[in-house]
Length: 302
Image (tube, rainbow, N blue to C red; front, side):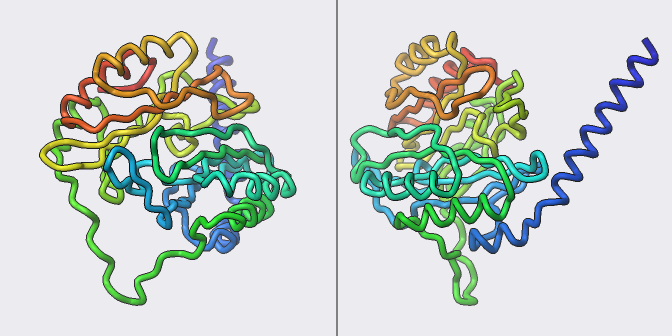
Protein backbone atom coordinates (compact mmCIF):
# COMPACT_ATOMS: atom_id res chain seq x y z
CA UNK A 1 0.00 0.00 0.00
CA UNK A 2 2.86 2.35 0.87
CA UNK A 3 4.51 1.66 -2.51
CA UNK A 4 1.20 2.30 -4.29
CA UNK A 5 0.83 5.62 -2.47
CA UNK A 6 4.36 6.60 -3.42
CA UNK A 7 3.69 5.65 -7.06
CA UNK A 8 0.52 7.72 -7.13
CA UNK A 9 2.31 10.69 -5.61
CA UNK A 10 5.15 10.36 -8.12
CA UNK A 11 2.67 10.20 -10.99
CA UNK A 12 1.03 13.38 -9.73
CA UNK A 13 4.36 15.19 -9.52
CA UNK A 14 5.33 14.06 -13.02
CA UNK A 15 1.99 15.26 -14.40
CA UNK A 16 2.51 18.68 -12.83
CA UNK A 17 6.05 18.84 -14.19
CA UNK A 18 4.81 17.92 -17.68
CA UNK A 19 2.13 20.62 -17.57
CA UNK A 20 4.65 23.22 -16.40
CA UNK A 21 7.09 22.21 -19.14
CA UNK A 22 4.38 22.48 -21.80
CA UNK A 23 3.39 25.92 -20.52
CA UNK A 24 7.01 27.09 -20.72
CA UNK A 25 7.20 25.93 -24.36
CA UNK A 26 4.44 28.34 -25.42
CA UNK A 27 5.72 31.78 -26.41
CA UNK A 28 2.83 33.75 -24.95
CA UNK A 29 4.32 37.09 -26.03
CA UNK A 30 4.07 35.98 -29.65
CA UNK A 31 0.50 34.79 -29.12
CA UNK A 32 -0.37 38.17 -27.55
CA UNK A 33 1.21 39.86 -30.57
CA UNK A 34 -0.88 37.84 -33.03
CA UNK A 35 -4.10 38.63 -31.17
CA UNK A 36 -3.08 42.25 -30.63
CA UNK A 37 -3.93 42.13 -26.94
CA UNK A 38 -3.01 40.65 -23.61
CA UNK A 39 -5.22 37.87 -22.26
CA UNK A 40 -8.32 39.04 -20.43
CA UNK A 41 -7.53 36.40 -17.82
CA UNK A 42 -4.81 33.89 -16.98
CA UNK A 43 -5.97 31.02 -14.77
CA UNK A 44 -3.56 28.19 -14.10
CA UNK A 45 -2.03 27.33 -17.47
CA UNK A 46 -4.98 28.73 -19.48
CA UNK A 47 -4.74 32.07 -21.30
CA UNK A 48 -8.18 33.42 -22.23
CA UNK A 49 -8.50 36.26 -24.75
CA UNK A 50 -11.55 38.46 -25.09
CA UNK A 51 -13.10 39.48 -28.43
CA UNK A 52 -16.16 41.43 -27.32
CA UNK A 53 -18.50 42.82 -29.97
CA UNK A 54 -18.31 46.36 -28.67
CA UNK A 55 -19.06 47.52 -32.21
CA UNK A 56 -22.65 46.25 -32.01
CA UNK A 57 -25.68 47.98 -30.53
CA UNK A 58 -27.92 45.04 -29.62
CA UNK A 59 -31.27 45.53 -27.92
CA UNK A 60 -33.65 42.97 -26.46
CA UNK A 61 -37.03 43.79 -24.93
CA UNK A 62 -35.97 47.44 -24.64
CA UNK A 63 -32.66 46.62 -22.93
CA UNK A 64 -29.38 47.63 -24.61
CA UNK A 65 -27.14 44.62 -24.10
CA UNK A 66 -23.72 45.37 -22.66
CA UNK A 67 -20.91 43.40 -24.33
CA UNK A 68 -20.04 41.66 -21.06
CA UNK A 69 -23.61 40.37 -20.70
CA UNK A 70 -24.00 38.48 -23.98
CA UNK A 71 -21.58 39.79 -26.62
CA UNK A 72 -18.26 38.74 -25.09
CA UNK A 73 -16.60 36.43 -27.59
CA UNK A 74 -13.52 34.61 -26.29
CA UNK A 75 -10.76 32.15 -27.12
CA UNK A 76 -8.92 30.06 -24.52
CA UNK A 77 -5.54 28.41 -25.12
CA UNK A 78 -4.24 25.61 -22.90
CA UNK A 79 -0.78 23.99 -23.33
CA UNK A 80 -1.09 20.42 -24.58
CA UNK A 81 1.09 17.88 -26.41
CA UNK A 82 3.87 20.36 -27.14
CA UNK A 83 1.42 22.94 -28.48
CA UNK A 84 -1.97 24.17 -27.35
CA UNK A 85 -5.58 23.09 -27.20
CA UNK A 86 -7.81 25.97 -28.30
CA UNK A 87 -11.49 26.48 -27.55
CA UNK A 88 -13.59 29.52 -28.27
CA UNK A 89 -17.04 31.08 -28.51
CA UNK A 90 -17.23 33.88 -31.08
CA UNK A 91 -20.09 36.36 -31.53
CA UNK A 92 -21.12 36.95 -35.13
CA UNK A 93 -23.83 38.50 -37.26
CA UNK A 94 -25.52 36.10 -39.68
CA UNK A 95 -23.74 37.64 -42.68
CA UNK A 96 -20.37 36.98 -41.00
CA UNK A 97 -20.88 33.28 -40.30
CA UNK A 98 -19.86 31.78 -43.64
CA UNK A 99 -16.77 33.98 -44.28
CA UNK A 100 -15.47 33.34 -40.75
CA UNK A 101 -16.26 29.61 -40.90
CA UNK A 102 -14.52 29.26 -44.28
CA UNK A 103 -11.36 30.93 -43.00
CA UNK A 104 -11.43 28.84 -39.82
CA UNK A 105 -11.46 25.53 -41.66
CA UNK A 106 -8.82 26.78 -44.12
CA UNK A 107 -6.64 27.43 -41.06
CA UNK A 108 -7.08 23.87 -39.80
CA UNK A 109 -9.56 24.69 -37.03
CA UNK A 110 -12.76 22.83 -36.23
CA UNK A 111 -16.28 24.22 -35.92
CA UNK A 112 -18.14 22.50 -33.08
CA UNK A 113 -21.39 24.49 -32.94
CA UNK A 114 -23.25 27.46 -34.48
CA UNK A 115 -26.44 28.70 -32.86
CA UNK A 116 -28.34 31.47 -31.13
CA UNK A 117 -28.17 32.27 -27.43
CA UNK A 118 -30.94 34.89 -27.32
CA UNK A 119 -34.39 35.39 -28.85
CA UNK A 120 -35.80 38.67 -30.24
CA UNK A 121 -32.40 40.40 -30.16
CA UNK A 122 -31.97 43.20 -32.71
CA UNK A 123 -29.75 42.68 -34.59
CA UNK A 124 -29.77 38.92 -34.15
CA UNK A 125 -26.46 37.50 -32.97
CA UNK A 126 -25.07 34.02 -33.45
CA UNK A 127 -22.35 32.13 -31.64
CA UNK A 128 -19.69 30.02 -33.32
CA UNK A 129 -17.81 27.52 -31.17
CA UNK A 130 -14.37 26.58 -32.42
CA UNK A 131 -11.63 24.17 -31.42
CA UNK A 132 -8.11 23.37 -32.50
CA UNK A 133 -4.79 21.80 -31.56
CA UNK A 134 -1.25 22.62 -32.62
CA UNK A 135 1.44 25.26 -32.52
CA UNK A 136 0.22 28.17 -30.42
CA UNK A 137 1.21 30.93 -32.86
CA UNK A 138 -0.26 29.08 -35.86
CA UNK A 139 -3.52 28.44 -34.03
CA UNK A 140 -3.73 32.08 -32.89
CA UNK A 141 -2.99 33.28 -36.43
CA UNK A 142 -5.75 31.10 -37.89
CA UNK A 143 -8.25 32.43 -35.35
CA UNK A 144 -7.18 36.05 -35.88
CA UNK A 145 -7.37 35.76 -39.67
CA UNK A 146 -10.83 34.21 -39.47
CA UNK A 147 -12.13 36.90 -37.11
CA UNK A 148 -10.78 39.50 -39.53
CA UNK A 149 -13.53 38.35 -41.93
CA UNK A 150 -16.03 39.88 -39.48
CA UNK A 151 -16.27 43.34 -37.97
CA UNK A 152 -15.09 42.05 -34.59
CA UNK A 153 -12.81 44.78 -33.14
CA UNK A 154 -9.30 43.36 -33.29
CA UNK A 155 -7.27 46.44 -32.40
CA UNK A 156 -6.68 46.86 -28.65
CA UNK A 157 -8.71 49.64 -27.04
CA UNK A 158 -6.47 52.55 -26.08
CA UNK A 159 -7.15 55.75 -24.18
CA UNK A 160 -4.39 57.77 -25.84
CA UNK A 161 -2.64 58.24 -22.52
CA UNK A 162 -5.77 59.55 -20.81
CA UNK A 163 -6.82 57.94 -17.52
CA UNK A 164 -9.12 54.98 -17.98
CA UNK A 165 -12.79 55.64 -17.28
CA UNK A 166 -14.04 54.10 -14.04
CA UNK A 167 -16.08 50.93 -14.57
CA UNK A 168 -19.86 51.35 -14.48
CA UNK A 169 -21.35 50.95 -11.01
CA UNK A 170 -23.34 47.81 -10.26
CA UNK A 171 -26.59 49.17 -8.80
CA UNK A 172 -27.59 45.86 -7.22
CA UNK A 173 -27.24 44.20 -3.81
CA UNK A 174 -24.28 42.11 -4.91
CA UNK A 175 -23.63 40.71 -1.42
CA UNK A 176 -27.12 39.24 -1.37
CA UNK A 177 -26.71 37.92 -4.91
CA UNK A 178 -23.48 36.19 -3.83
CA UNK A 179 -25.27 34.60 -0.91
CA UNK A 180 -28.18 33.35 -3.00
CA UNK A 181 -26.19 32.02 -5.96
CA UNK A 182 -23.65 30.41 -3.61
CA UNK A 183 -20.42 31.66 -5.19
CA UNK A 184 -18.66 35.03 -5.26
CA UNK A 185 -19.46 37.11 -8.32
CA UNK A 186 -17.37 39.80 -9.95
CA UNK A 187 -18.12 43.06 -11.74
CA UNK A 188 -17.11 43.27 -15.39
CA UNK A 189 -18.12 46.09 -17.73
CA UNK A 190 -21.27 47.03 -15.82
CA UNK A 191 -22.40 43.40 -15.43
CA UNK A 192 -22.22 41.27 -12.28
CA UNK A 193 -21.01 37.84 -13.37
CA UNK A 194 -20.98 34.40 -11.79
CA UNK A 195 -19.13 31.25 -12.79
CA UNK A 196 -20.40 28.09 -11.12
CA UNK A 197 -18.20 25.03 -11.82
CA UNK A 198 -19.43 21.46 -11.85
CA UNK A 199 -18.25 18.90 -9.31
CA UNK A 200 -17.50 16.27 -11.96
CA UNK A 201 -14.33 16.56 -14.10
CA UNK A 202 -14.89 17.36 -17.79
CA UNK A 203 -12.58 16.07 -20.51
CA UNK A 204 -12.39 16.80 -24.24
CA UNK A 205 -10.34 14.50 -26.43
CA UNK A 206 -8.94 12.92 -23.28
CA UNK A 207 -7.74 16.25 -21.83
CA UNK A 208 -9.20 17.63 -18.62
CA UNK A 209 -10.84 21.01 -19.18
CA UNK A 210 -9.62 22.98 -16.21
CA UNK A 211 -9.96 25.56 -14.85
CA UNK A 212 -13.60 25.05 -15.81
CA UNK A 213 -14.59 28.72 -16.10
CA UNK A 214 -11.90 29.88 -18.55
CA UNK A 215 -12.44 26.75 -20.66
CA UNK A 216 -16.17 27.44 -20.96
CA UNK A 217 -17.53 24.49 -18.99
CA UNK A 218 -18.86 26.28 -15.90
CA UNK A 219 -22.41 27.62 -15.61
CA UNK A 220 -22.19 31.32 -16.44
CA UNK A 221 -24.68 33.93 -15.20
CA UNK A 222 -24.73 37.68 -15.78
CA UNK A 223 -26.83 40.38 -14.09
CA UNK A 224 -27.06 43.71 -15.94
CA UNK A 225 -28.81 46.35 -13.78
CA UNK A 226 -31.85 47.90 -15.47
CA UNK A 227 -32.97 50.21 -12.64
CA UNK A 228 -35.10 49.99 -9.52
CA UNK A 229 -33.47 46.80 -8.26
CA UNK A 230 -34.19 45.00 -11.54
CA UNK A 231 -31.70 43.23 -13.76
CA UNK A 232 -31.57 41.65 -17.17
CA UNK A 233 -30.07 38.19 -16.83
CA UNK A 234 -28.65 35.73 -19.31
CA UNK A 235 -25.96 33.08 -19.47
CA UNK A 236 -25.80 29.33 -19.85
CA UNK A 237 -26.30 26.33 -17.63
CA UNK A 238 -23.84 23.45 -18.13
CA UNK A 239 -25.67 20.15 -17.63
CA UNK A 240 -25.63 16.44 -18.25
CA UNK A 241 -28.67 14.94 -19.94
CA UNK A 242 -30.60 13.92 -16.84
CA UNK A 243 -30.36 17.47 -15.46
CA UNK A 244 -31.85 19.25 -18.49
CA UNK A 245 -35.56 19.02 -17.77
CA UNK A 246 -35.32 19.58 -14.00
CA UNK A 247 -33.39 22.80 -14.78
CA UNK A 248 -36.00 23.85 -17.37
CA UNK A 249 -38.79 23.37 -14.82
CA UNK A 250 -36.92 25.28 -12.11
CA UNK A 251 -36.17 28.22 -14.42
CA UNK A 252 -39.74 28.46 -15.68
CA UNK A 253 -41.04 28.32 -12.09
CA UNK A 254 -38.79 31.32 -11.41
CA UNK A 255 -40.22 33.29 -14.35
CA UNK A 256 -37.09 32.83 -16.47
CA UNK A 257 -37.34 32.22 -20.22
CA UNK A 258 -35.46 29.38 -21.93
CA UNK A 259 -33.91 30.73 -25.13
CA UNK A 260 -31.67 27.92 -26.40
CA UNK A 261 -30.63 24.33 -25.64
CA UNK A 262 -27.75 22.71 -27.48
CA UNK A 263 -24.22 21.32 -27.32
CA UNK A 264 -20.99 23.32 -27.61
CA UNK A 265 -18.45 20.54 -28.16
CA UNK A 266 -18.14 17.26 -30.06
CA UNK A 267 -16.11 14.85 -27.92
CA UNK A 268 -16.49 15.86 -24.29
CA UNK A 269 -17.01 13.43 -21.43
CA UNK A 270 -19.49 13.36 -19.86
CA UNK A 271 -21.73 14.62 -22.67
CA UNK A 272 -22.79 18.18 -21.84
CA UNK A 273 -25.76 20.32 -22.79
CA UNK A 274 -25.88 24.10 -22.56
CA UNK A 275 -29.09 25.98 -21.78
CA UNK A 276 -29.38 29.73 -22.31
CA UNK A 277 -31.96 31.90 -20.60
CA UNK A 278 -33.31 35.44 -20.32
CA UNK A 279 -35.38 37.58 -17.96
CA UNK A 280 -35.63 41.21 -16.86
CA UNK A 281 -37.15 41.43 -13.39
CA UNK A 282 -36.34 41.96 -9.72
CA UNK A 283 -32.73 40.81 -9.32
CA UNK A 284 -33.23 39.02 -6.00
CA UNK A 285 -36.28 37.17 -7.27
CA UNK A 286 -34.37 36.07 -10.36
CA UNK A 287 -31.35 35.01 -8.29
CA UNK A 288 -33.58 32.72 -6.23
CA UNK A 289 -34.98 31.17 -9.42
CA UNK A 290 -31.46 30.66 -10.75
CA UNK A 291 -30.30 29.07 -7.50
CA UNK A 292 -33.23 26.65 -7.58
CA UNK A 293 -32.07 25.60 -11.06
CA UNK A 294 -28.40 25.38 -10.01
CA UNK A 295 -29.44 23.02 -7.22
CA UNK A 296 -30.73 20.62 -9.90
CA UNK A 297 -27.17 20.24 -11.21
CA UNK A 298 -23.95 18.77 -9.81
CA UNK A 299 -22.49 22.22 -9.16
CA UNK A 300 -20.02 23.50 -6.56
CA UNK A 301 -21.75 26.10 -4.39
CA UNK A 302 -21.62 27.25 -0.79
